[in-house]
Image (cartoon, rainbow, N blue to C red):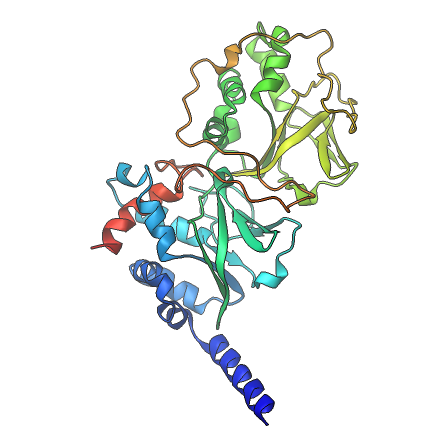
Length: 386
């Protein structure tokens, strides 16, 4: 009898939780009082979310707000941009109901409700990367910022709420992301080739971005390139019209680069390669799609170049090129305000501890798909703590 009563009580509790509307679910959770107070400032958004079904809300805890408000970016914002604030809130709402048990160690890229082209240029809505690392459920957002679930599976009538320890960062445009990621040579090359606007405003884009060491390794080949020749090389690193997250890249996948050349993906022992370049940092989300950092500059005249997966380093794709002591492509590139530390989860293995960005949430607001959580919520802190 006691077992039956306990089972009945559990069923009643579960049924009650699923029948709670969003407002009741938020107000009944003390750790979400800041979020509750903030969302209530936007009655139309609250009504929209309250009537929505089959959604997952990533709800920043009070501590997450406190962490943000103590960060370096919080004091830099003086104007309250309600459009931007709603954008960051929309980014915390995922299409689909995803209980913690549904998130595995294979990264999933889940669309959010953020589809305002001012901040996102991804068809179907900007995504969040969801993955299980060790015993934790982690969500990666812009600049590889990670948010760990501290309290999972608060059910409500429209879906499920997961409380997270850090605000998500809305992915920024490619040029800003490259600078913040320490890819100063790639950022400088895009500027020199007059491609910044093209890649920053592109929709559904995949960029294979060589790291600084890759450009330096072929320094003799890039030192005197014309703008046209540099553009030809860089457009071979861009796939337009396809967002190639790691989960969609299979061994033998062929992609068509912006310059018309073919790129071939190789997957070997959990490592990913494009032509002969190894992906060293995958899945850096950007406003228009995704960036994969690679260890070699791709050569549009060597489309058949293949990797040697067992080698510790891959041969450069520019025969006869030699390294340079300095890298002129980095000249004039701004110093990053918050570096990405380490790398995100590799496509095949996610057991390591989650790395993070060193910022508390992002930089000052940048339009056209480039705005950080810190920028968006700095003004919110004034209201929330009034």
